Image (tube, rainbow, N blue to C red; front, side, top):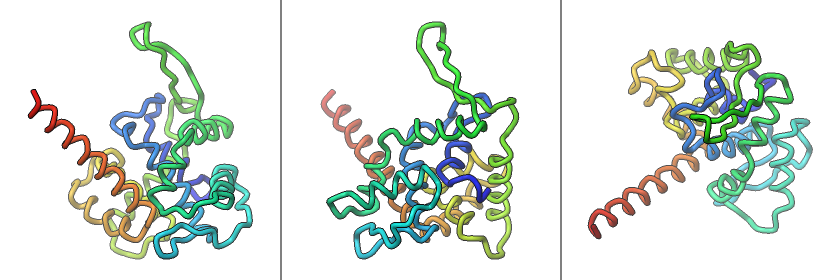
Length: 219
């Protein structure tokens, strides 16, 4: 799992083997952007000081995805907090991460039409089976959910991202949701990017509910 970035793992967890994101599409871009920041934080390249994300080590990581994000952080003229950086990094993040997985031979890119009318791009796995990196990630996540012993920082971060996106049931459908939710919430609270993702999603839901209520009152 260590050879695959957290952003790639989030994409693999989001997409089924037939190349379609089911129940994971809405906030996926936030998850991918937050995963890039988390990879950089785990690599010792960035941290949060006060309210702002700062570059603590400008040396490249050697990973194209994270180095591209690090370049943006280094050369931005404004100081930004985690929330602003996640929103900023969502631009083209999905196509970039999926293209990386296609280039690595993990996924394929296929285009078709839904009902022979609506164009669609799918990203199925190479042979229809689950990629080893995804299987390994699921095993690590399951172990973190069911065992009380120490979890390594990278797995804890991945669980925190899953928590922020509310993907517990999607990733571990056979476990009791509350058991996984409570455990992963502990991990999320230690990952600043995951906390920022959850706040963004919560704010979006609040705004959507308020708009729906206003529309209903107006009607």
